[in-house]
Amino acid sequence: MTRVIHTGDTHLGYRQYHSAERRADFLSAFRRVIEDAIDADVDAVVHAGDLYHDRRPGLGDLLGTLDLLRTLDDAGIPFLAIVGNHEGTREGQWLDLFERLGLATRLDDSGVEIGETTFYGLDYVPQSRREELDYAFDPPETEYAALVAHGLFEPFAYADWDTEELLERSSVAFDAVLLGDNHHPDRARVAGTWVTYCGSTERTSAAERDERGYNLVTFGDDSAENDDVRITRRGLPTREFVFVDVELGQGEGVDRVLERVGQHYLEDRVAIVTVDGEGSAIAPAEVESFARDRGALIARVNDAREVESANDLDVSFADPDTAVRESIRELGLSEAATDIDETVRESKVADSNVRETVEKRVRTLLEEEPASFDPSGSKNASETDPEEVVDDGDGAEAVEPSGTAGGVEATETVRSAEGGETAETAETGETAEVSELGDGSGGDGQASMEEYL
Image 1: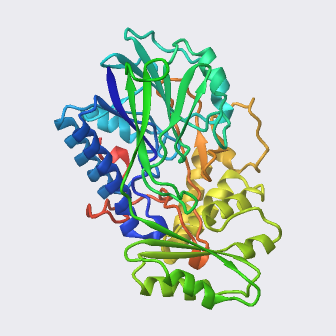
Image 2: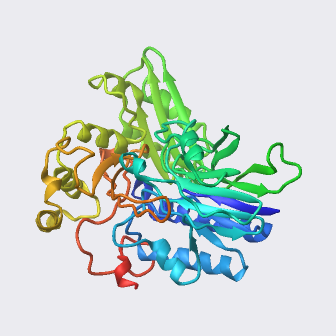
Image 3: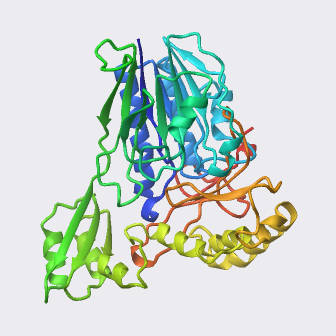
């Protein structure tokens, strides 16, 4: 029997709502997964991608990860993982560094035996490159086989990957497919194989209301209903979000909203207030200040009525980053223009440094990626340009090279945006070179892999 924790989408380093406390929350959630693995004495921890929120995590997040992986290694529990779309780079992967240190194993098409099960890996691959995959995996010598992959697979929400085709074309008959990318935990039977998402370990957006957690997967369990594979769900104690939904009637306004907010215990919680109905306009700043005065760590207001009346845009400003990205994409800008737009709006670039940063970025693009100045849509899949901008389904854009089923390298540029007072901004990789690594306190100091190798 083989028993593993299936986790993923830990998004370490995400400074959600510009909050250092929220950044620490993501590492705390991952720490709890590692502690649970040791307490349960599982055979391995299997991570299905997006260990980090972006490709250049801060030094504090790297040191925190190393500390946890050493703790897991000291307990004799292997850490098996793949690369997701958020953390991929062209130069190399942090996962490769952890593997070199003997603290992790990067799964690929050769497989890794854990007890009676062989685990294979399929890094994130953009939709435009999937036709190049041959799904050729080395034959297993164990009774069971599992594929760990990252992407949006059928039959789940936002799917763009044909799971049944993957299973039919694969050279190995998998007993389970353990997935990352979709933050909503779920499972289904596809062509007789269990396919499951573990969900994220922390809330990366206000839309993720359900409890966070991970899967416990057992191969060779006699009590399992089908194929001796048993999948159970384990919850994680994360920072509480308080969701206050207010339906305003005719003549009602901010007083009614404040009354509803005041009915909740908010100490050290994230308060998400959603307003709908026919009442009068409200000032989000007043509501947010009211919530913070009552102990809320963070307060955000989403007036759904404003969204409905704003040019019939079908977006939700509970996640304004996604809304801004979608609007910018509709402009048809070149990759370079979009990249530069990100630089101008990036919260980590001081106003006094924007001009210099943009100039450096333009020079880099002209020297290394001149095709990125082509207008959006001017390239097609048959051209030889090795990169293509794609949408990964969760609001991020990725620049990805081609690859194969095992060890596919992934490059991503996450587009971030500031949306004003109520904005929820994804922290992304710096567009300029960073001369300092930071002090290890979990601040904004960034590091490149080359500086560690």
